[in-house]
Length: 67
Image (cartoon, rainbow, N blue to C red; front, side, top):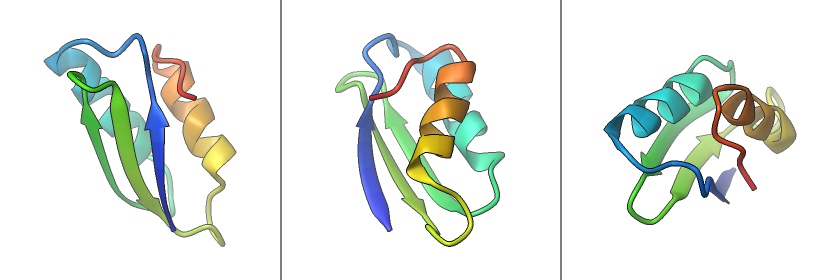
């Protein structure tokens, strides 16, 4: 499954690394790519293993509230 999230507070390379690390730490996330310029996060995941809400929560806990 693929989804696009937005993280309005994401603004730099450090933000990108923090968001991607938070997503990659979750079982079921096969890829995650954050773009601070567009504030978008592209994520590919297995919905049988992890929910989009869990991904959103992990990113938010990393300091970048995701919508």
